[in-house]
Structures are given as structure tokens and as C-alpha cells.
Amino acid sequence: MRLDDVNNVVRFHALTGTATAVGKELEKMRDETIVTVTIRGPVDRAAALAEAIQRLGPLADALFNEQGEEQLKLLLRAVTPVVPVPEHTLREAAMRKAAMKGVLEASDWLTAAQIARLAELSGSNPSQQPNRWKHDGLIFAIDINGKDHFPAYGLDPDRKYRPRRAMMDVLKVFGNRKDGWALAFWFASVNSYLGGARPLDVLQSDPKHVIEAAEAEAEGVAHG
Image 1 (tube, rainbow, N blue to C red):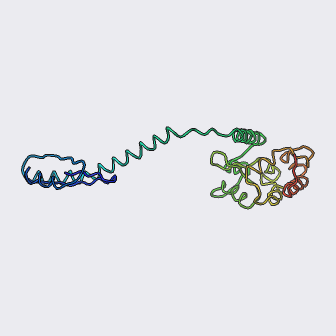
Image 2 (tube, rainbow, N blue to C red):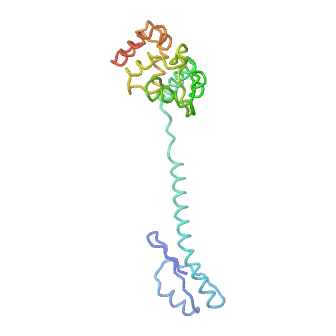
Image 3 (cartoon, rainbow, N blue to C red):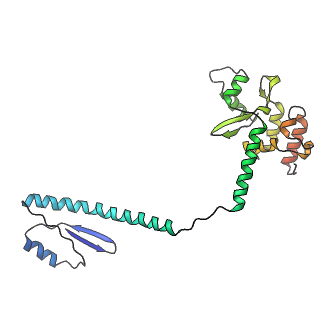
């Protein structure tokens, strides 16, 4: 077998025959490094083994290359400095986490199944109804652990826990400007337009004022 490493290219050849015949072939080679494997035995078996070794050669070469890549990755990891997270990013993350905690504590958040029971919804799959309300812009939801949760303040007990009519008007004002969590933040934040009250606190008692606060927010006026 001949191993020829030139420009990182390894070639494998199998030579079979007598020592004299193989020696003459080796003398013709101009390689810097030659690795030979001697197999003694019947000619047919020796030839078969030589062929098998030649076939295994490229697989070994591929393993060498893979190991080299892995070693290079390890070396790069070792010399690459760890970049710390900027302080302002950590502060923003902490503030958002605190805001999300405040949103969750400001109201009960119900799954579609829970609303279906409260509203005594019927049908083959009553849990789908709250999702239709969301799709139709009657109420919004936030994602908690991969599942939609709806704000209890958006439901009207006097209407068998259907969405409050004012909620639809508020959502229509904001349109696509706010996603579920942004809407939740707005409803749970004190609002100067509402005299320092939170929209969720006065949605039932003064829905018209809440809609006007949403319109002011949508126009870019800062409140709270």
C-alpha cells in the first residue's frame, strides 16, 4: 500500500506480488514518505486483503480530516475571549422581567379551556371559541409557556363572560401596533390620561375614557 501526502492530499495504492516485483515498483515512486504493509499467505487472499486495505484508506483519511477540524474548533474556543453581556442589556432584561411579573399579578389570566367553562360554551370543541374571539379582535392573549392566556378583565361577567365590548374598540384603535404582551403592559400601566389609574381598573366603569386613552396613545402622546 502506498500513502502519498502531497498538498494535504492522501492517496492510497495497493501493490501485490513478490518482494522483488514490489520493490521495483517502490523504487519508481518519488514520494517523501511511503508506508508499506506486508501480507504473507496465498496470493488470492493477500490480494484481497490488499484491496480491502486500499478501500479503508480514504475512510481513515476522512477521519484524520474530521479530527483536525475538531481540534481546530477546540483551539478557537480556547483562544476566543468570552464577551460579557452589556450592563444595559442586563438592566433591560431585568426591567422587562419585572414588568411581566407585574402584568401577571395585575389580573387573572385564563386559558381557553377555563373560559369555556366559565362562559358555559357548548359545541364539540368549546375551547376553540376564545381563540375565535382573539382572531376576530374581540380580546387579546399573551403567551405563557407556549399557551394563550386571556385577561380576566377583558371578559364581562354580566354577559356570561363574553369579551367586553370596549375591549374590541381598544384593540381596533391599536391595530397591529401592539402585540399581546405590549397590550398587557399598556392595560397594567398607570395612565395620566386616566388620572393615574390603570386602563384595566376602569375598563368596566369608564370604558369610553379608556378608549380615548388608547386613541391618545396611538397618536403618540406619552402617558403614565
